[in-house]
Amino acid sequence: MKYSVIGLGKLGASMAAGIASRGYEVIGVDVLEENVNSINQGNAPVQETNLQEVIQNNSSRIRATLEYTDAIINTDISFVIVPTPSEPNGRFSLKYAKEAFIEIGKALKNKNKYHLVVLTSTVLPGSMRYGLIPLLEKHSGKSCGIDFGACYSPEFIALGSIIYNFLNPDFNLVGEYDKKSGDLLEEAYMDIMVNNPPCKRMSIENAELTKVALNTFITSKITFANMLADITSHIPGGDIDAITDALGSDSRVGHKYLKGGLGYGGPCFPRDNIALTSMSEYIGSSAEMAKTTDKVNDDLTEKIGKDICSAVTGGVVGILGLAYKPDTHVIEESQSIILAKYLKKCGFTVIGYDPLANDCVEKEAGDIITVVNTLKECIKKSDVVVIATPDKEFAELNVSDLKNKIVYDCWRLLRSKLQKSSSLTYMALGVERNDYRIALKLSDLWGG
Image 1 (cartoon, rainbow, N blue to C red):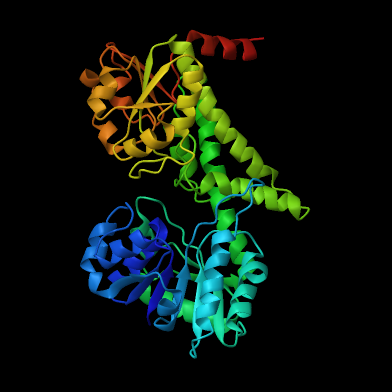
Image 2: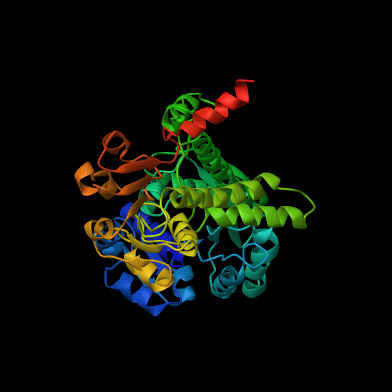
């Protein structure tokens, strides 16, 4: 089997590299000549963990082109992973997907063999059957299910570990146009995946909804833990880690994504809640839970900002961790940036440091945060230090590094080292702060 990957961004390039690492020939297609040239020179077109190494090690099996026909004629299965950006109404745009499917359709017109087209990008129910497959048929002059096949099969990955997640999924999701399409894709996955995961096959529309629903469920779980962390901060002896450890021990709940910390962000989670809400309203249903999750997530960051404002008036706040999570440079919907905006409005000077995201912040949020080049410099120049992401570099800090600072630890990363120190002020989300007013409130509540 030979594969083509349409779209060589973070996900597409990583997918192509992952497939090649399993011994298969892969042709990548992109509209950007620089991405094509990078692949053909054995280089990663984007930054992602291990991507450069995997491409380099498998360069004999990967090549890239600007020509769809080249890729379609010379492969058996095409994975399409192009951007589906959010529109003003919250739903996902099919603009780039439609452009790709038109070109694939034109290429299929010149192919005599059966070909399977697999959409991997996140879309909403109905997008494939009513928006994209008709374009393949129109521009190829052929019929889906007879001359070519189609599936919707999104990946469940996290930036910073895309290649590993792609090759070792919990399960493969296959929305199939017909049984032949599903059989072929399941067979391909059996060969590509390392960990022999189960394959969940269903209709295209059910798969489209499953993808968005899974992300929405995860954000609900994250937000529930974050809500508990805020409550725990107001309970004498409060300890969110003790609570979530107990909750996660119940098999109905589980420990994953049950941490309690700064809210979720990134290119997927926030927009999936909004998209599900928008589509549900359009079709006459309701997704109030998704809408509430998104609101609670945003509200928590403001609460943390208010906590910092209550501890100090003015000065310099240094935010450690500017990406939406560790091990990536992506700052889209980063709660660190949202917190910085709030603190700046409150009169603070905000500086920041991130092991990977400094350049992105300078380009996209330089008017909000002044980026510094080292962790040490950020701490030195700050009156308040906010640990916004649980990055391993920040976990190495000690009392001596933060002496005389006010430290707000969103992830309790340094709790064991700092909580009892008298040489600094330690505050943490989800940990009671020995405030007599907290005990007084409960005493008033229950004391009669």
